[in-house]
Image (cartoon, rainbow, N blue to C red; front, top):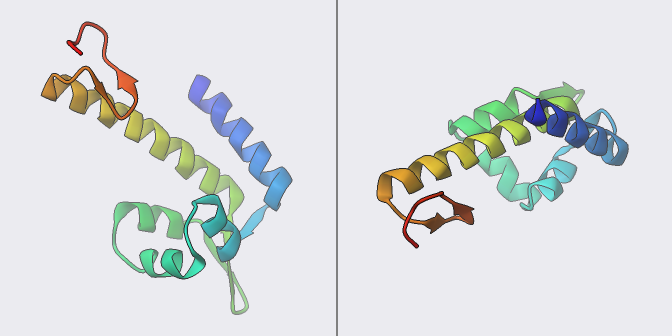
Length: 107
């Protein structure tokens, strides 16, 4: 439920700032990338690139990305990163890694 709420909040914030569609430049700004770097990265077959490209909409020669789908991807990516970070900590026995604490682990 918390993840659904945070996704809805993120989606609302992105809609207020960018509208229903993000341009490549706006998406690059959101992801803290250069537009050219993002354009090149989206041509790869990496899972994140494929997921972002699913949100792609072409209107004439212009390329846009659905704000709703980008918000969903960002929330999913954050949840996956948090879960994999916690799993990595448990496997390695490290107490603090990537800013996450594991209860009962030696620091």
